[in-house]
Structures are given as C-alpha cells and as structure tokens.
Image 1 (cartoon, rainbow, N blue to C red):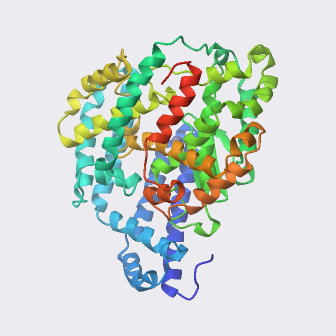
Image 2: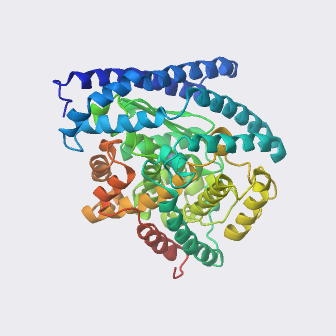
Image 3: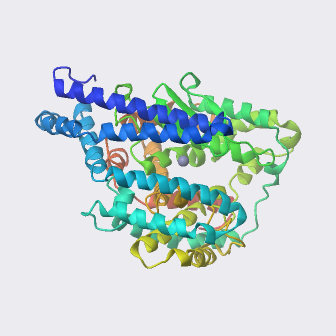
Length: 508
Ligand code: ZN
C-alpha cells in the first residue's frame, strides 16, 4: 500500500529520511568497494570519506526539525492501525530518533576515533600474539561502552542499552536464563558426542579449485532464490552481505582450496542475509523500515539457510549429484550420506567462526558472559585472558595455546563496543529452529520439495512471513506472529537432539 498522500508532514518526513538513507547507502558502497576492489593506497582517504558522510547523516538525523515533524505526526499516527506502513514508519523512526539524540555528537566522534585506533592496534597485536599491546585500548573501550550505556538511564541492566542497539526489546533479564539452560543442556550433549567414534570428514579436505567452487556456489544460490539481477557475489577477506537499495543487495565470499565447506556454507549464510534484504517490501525503500528486524532475526535467516536447509540430508539429495559431477575425481567414491556426515562433524575447537552448529553457541555464550562480567565490574580487562581460558577449559575442554586463537580472535571488542553483539549469534540460532518449526507446521510438504530442488514455497513463506516486514515489528512481535510464542529453546534443542542423535547413533 502506498503512503497516504494527503498528509504533508509525512511527505516531508519521507523526503528527509530518503536523503539520509542515500548518504548511508553511499557509505555502504564505499565499504563494499574497500573490502573488494579498492587498492591499498586508497585506505586513508576512504576512512576520511566514510567518516565525513557518516557525520553528515548523523547531523541530518538528529536535526531538531526532524524531531518536530515526528511530534506533529502524533495525531496522524494515532489515527492509523499499528501495523500500517505509515504508522510503522513514524513509530520506528521516532524510536531511532529518540535513541540517537541521547548520545552527544562529541561522544560519537570520540568513540569512532578510538575504535579506529583500537582496530589498528588489534590488527598488529593478533598475529603477534600480544594481548598486553591491546589491553589499554580494550580498557578504554570498556569505559566508552559504559559511558554510552549511561546515556540511557532507564535500563534495568547496564548492558541493556547496548543490546537494544542491535536487538530492540531484548534484555539481559530475558537472555540470561535461556542461555543458562542452553549451556546446561549442551555441555553433556557435546561430551556424549565427543565420546562417540568420530565422523570421517577427510573428503572435504582435498584440492578443490577456486573457479570450480565459485561456479558451483553460484548455481546453488541462484537455485535457492538469490536474484542476480539485484545483486552480485565478489571475493573478499571476510565474507559479508550489504545493501545499497532493495534492488542492489550484494554478497562476498572467500575460498579455501583445501576446505570445500568454507566458501560453500559461508556463501549460503551470506545469501540468507541477502535474501532477507532482497525480500523487503518495495514500498519501504529508502526508509528506516528497509532493513531486517534486528541483528538476531537477521542472523536467524542466515543460519536457517546455512544449517537447517544447507546442512540437511534432503538438500544434498538434490545438490550432491551436481557437486559430485563438478568434482568427480575428488568425490567420485564418496556417497551422499558420507558427504552429509562430513559436513555435520561435531568437534570442540577454539575458533568460533569455524565451529559446528552444536558447539557454536558455547563460543557465543562464553563471550556474552565475559562481556557482562566486564560491564558489571566483576572482571577486569587485565584478567580477561585467564577468564577466557578458564571458560574454554570448562565448556569445551580446550585451552588456547596462545591469545591469537584465544582472547584476541574476534574483531568485535576491538573495533566496536564491549556488549551488544555476541548474544545475537546464539539468539539467531535459537530463532532459526523456531521459525523452521513454524514453517514445517504450515507446509509439511516443504522438506519433500527441498529434496527435489524446489525452493520456491520455502522462499515464498519466508518472504511473506518474515522478509517483507522489515523493521515493522520487533523481534518479539515477529516471533509471536510467526510462531505463536516468544523466544523458546525447545525447537533448537529438539532439532539438535534428533539430527545428531542419528548422526552419532546415540540417544541425546
Ligand atoms: Zn551472519
């Protein structure tokens, strides 16, 4: 439905938001270029260009005139239904505006300056295995994270405002009990798997030429529904998906020629993010509604495609003959069942991004707990490495032999804030199983269609239930609408118990 044209204040609001959106989209384009094709010599100027544009966008968004427009639109908003396009646009923009104006521009400048310095220190310290070098930066990041949280003085927990930046409506009080239960259930389950005979996944670690991998992947994501007329895939160091408009949603990947699963599953993952953005309602274009609901819901969509679909037996029923045809020399003697087992090997490890879907959540929850302890003041940054290693020993039975693979491994704390991100990875996993359960309930034929290489109904369901709504609903509202309940642990645990009980031939 188009916006009602009779409301002049709404037209003014849309015009302002569209200008801000255009600046932000150009920033995304500059980031994409930086990560794909920009020569190294462009780095300094690019950093400056991005900072300038971001500042202009921030000034425009926090302009009191925009606040006034939102005030003036109160009666109009009240006359509309909650989930109408216009009411949703006004509501979500007001929420963003009220958050944005609480944070002084001077603080934002200080924060981004520090983040750039911290990132650069981490880039050197990580390969050199030198935690001491970044410790002072991390201490300052902690201070700045606390300062940012302090601008929102109505929260229950000091971490809540940081969580709400990415997951509006979520809080420590809500997340912590679910994570505790999840951890309690996962640790014995992983132990039982570790005590079973391991799965042989050596078929994935032969030589697979880059060009052949890329063209196979292109065929897969096209079949799954990624629209190449409104996107493209390029190479990069760290895979990501990004949007410049609903008509231009790109993704990137990296290829390891001795790890067949890396590019394949990270591409399906990023495609999940990209399908979400390609599936937004076109009338949301250039407004704050034209994005995924939240960080965790976005992650639920990438993980749904990557794991619940991409690592399922039915998926490979269709795609394995094609993969085998592409790599006949390497996979000619490997059956679809053997391949399915290989891509689902569970192996406690030190690196979060390489973790399988069973152990992955332990990695994310370790970081979440350590973040909370730092923000609460019960863990000093100087003791972080010991606390990290202790938790890895306790949860995964491993101690990092160095900090490069330990406390220094993730970029998040060193380029962003302490708090507000890591919970989202686990929430995304839980939600992915919850959404998938609702999907199968509403159309039990979908698994059969997947085996036949037909992804249209699945994609259509996700588009109509989740993608098209953009930021109209909060994570909780969306979960309630789609699954009939709030966040729940059960669907994920049922999925894990069934799948891995079968794969490891044990009762989980
Ligand atoms: Zn992701």
